[in-house]
Image: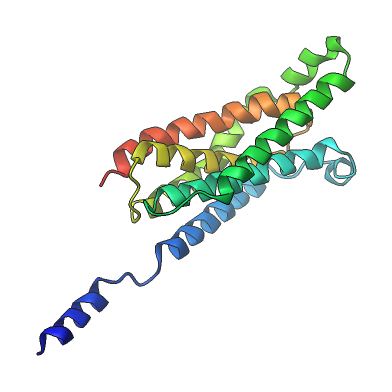
Length: 211
């Protein structure tokens, strides 16, 4: 066998069957589906879903969570490939945070001060803190599984971004059930639920994503 033929054969054997980006997107999709199945099995849509959809606050939760999930997932993908650039995903994250800040400011302006704490505490804070991590566990496991096939230079940080993406996916699903629509409630309790997943992702990433 000629040397060139041997090199070509070895290169074909070493090449992955699927590009990492394709595997990552498949894992991300599986995570979203897992969270959705768990949501409909254990939580379900809020009873007044159609009426709530006609308000401003309810759709706003999805306008906050979806860009956050997309941007965190994009940054995670970039961090798993050393030569990649987060690019647009970083700007999408900034836009999501700016929208959240504007929603909070509007809520504080519209509501009388004596109602601020009432809206912030809401009625389902404890359930929120339990449900978001529960829904986010599947997406995080899916992402960590495929990230082991990547080459993250900062395993802990990559895991943290994966945890944030998973937490935002869980929060997006939970938003379809949660009767507390105040941006103050979302900013505090949704963020705490996502922070829990971010920390879980960081710890998991440090152990599972090492080269």
